[in-house]
Length: 115
Image 1: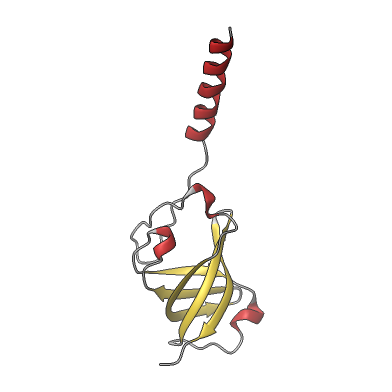
Image 2: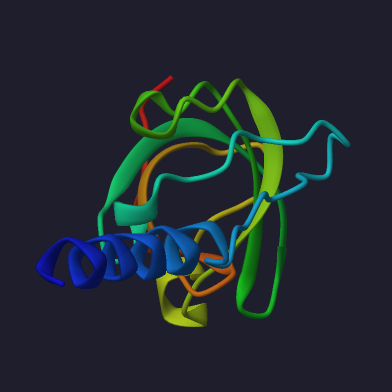
């Protein structure tokens, strides 16, 4: 009876994992990025890139590869607080950190890089 109960619990756990929500961002470049690993929520990742546009609480950055996620270089839009984006201009080289919050990627810090 314990074997059946254990097998049932294992099957249920596998079913829940298989039915879990997956998110695969499609950046503005049109190339699908690798799906984040299940533990990407609340974890910070970092990158460097060039500001392409700033609109309200969104910043589009053409960035290099993001090692922690296995992402190639691409252009994508991140959410940010307008106060974080104050003083940045198009073409600025930046170093930034971000985290995943649900289905969006949110800037946690951003700083201008010296040329």
